[in-house]
Length: 317
Image (cartoon, rainbow, N blue to C red; front, side, top):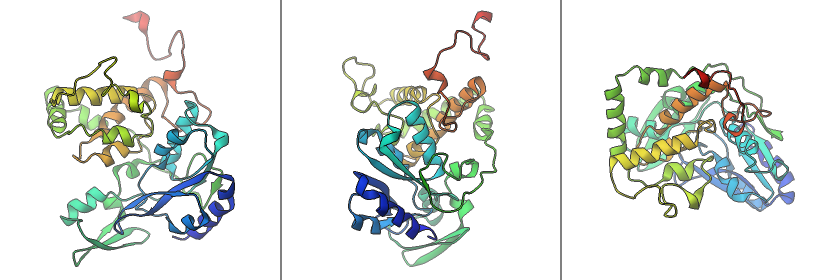
């Protein structure tokens, strides 16, 4: 990438004062990247940036609280850092943020569905607006817009909102997210919506990948899904239990979810989990005029208290 060497040099300059810097490196094939933890100057040589760098690296920050950490972020990732700072789950003085403007990331799932199989990816080439994937001797080219993650089509934050170092030219975000996908789903009859989620949750294997990948899900060993004291939920393999867990997870993310999409991306059963989170965000936006991680100086609405909320008329009930 055009600014990769500049980014590497910026990291090398600051690495001696840090415990580690988190970025991306090539994964097990050319299409997939994986998190890279840079502790020595030689580690920086493995750093990559590009549309294959899909992971929200901020997921790792709460587990490293108290250490001096550098992190490479895209615009959507920076929203998570803002939200974590607002909730005092990380310390700003311990963090060096390397911002990278982003034009979108690819969805491996979309590419896989179009190609039929991604078992043996031999090569990948990215251009400004397309991606060419070679797999099992066959080459296929796709427009980046066609195989981009869904979140990229509505992203208003192509440039990180928070950074100490910005590498590359800022990119304007000129789209409007009006929650059209949520509104379209809400137009369906109640029975159809319920059947949709029952069918989706029937595929769930309760692996908790969605929880583990979520940067705002920080209860870890005290998760309501696995706690035995108190014993909130059973481990029964029923659709009702699976749906209950996802509803609880969604409620715990109310006003906190930055819509990074890690829950949905990590799900091995392709359950459209982000739709649930976006429904909650739509309501939070309507009630409190707040979108998680977008205003550095804001206080999340569910971390504050007002005797009378402007848009909630409790006395009128």
